[in-house]
Length: 172
Picture (cartoon, helix red, strand yellow):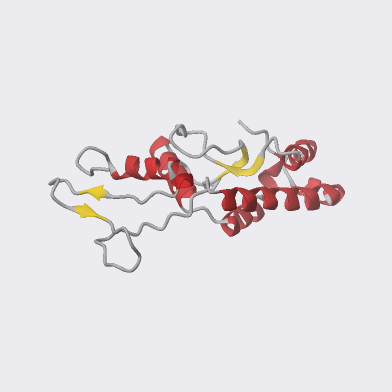
């Protein structure tokens, strides 16, 4: 990658797209004379390490799906109680069934921004942004990139619990 030709945001998008291919990444400085990166963990490199915990990795896909299955199962068997704590109880049950069978996920990207350059995800009942915050397309795009680059199943879990009342909403 060359930082003169691509914005940092786009470099990260391309790194995420290629994250399943076990590649070493190098970024050429704007002057074209410097390269940021190292081929080995045993030799020094200039500011090479961007912690990539991509949502597109097989391990994170398994973790995300496992969370979806476990929570949707718990919520389904407890639905006679839990459904009444959501805004639309019967939509809640429908959403839990869709998550359980793999048609949806609890958490997905914000639909306010283009996600074509990011790893594919199932449409979420919730998005990775706090539902109480006002947002625009720029904030949504940056949030989607961060979510894809630095995925955490525990963050999904906390978001699901904090946004529980919204699990009965109709996904857009």
